[in-house]
Length: 100
Image (cartoon, rainbow, N blue to C red):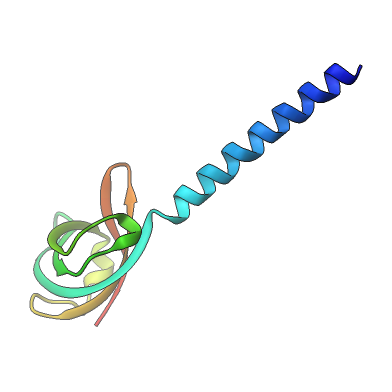
């Protein structure tokens, strides 16, 4: 009987460790930055932003094309200085919020 309890505790500890790993990596996959809008492609749902480093996403300062919901681009145009939040989803970077 003690062997069964020990195995159950080990299994629960493993599940908790994996759960904390996945929840931590999900949080680390979103970051904020500011930069300059270089290009917008509303039809493709893409925006190009020249920005500083985004440490949460392990991105150095660069110019990068992001996917974006076209509804977020209502008042944004090339040349605007913006603050934005981006996340990595399925290997792509996506702007989830943006403001001037």
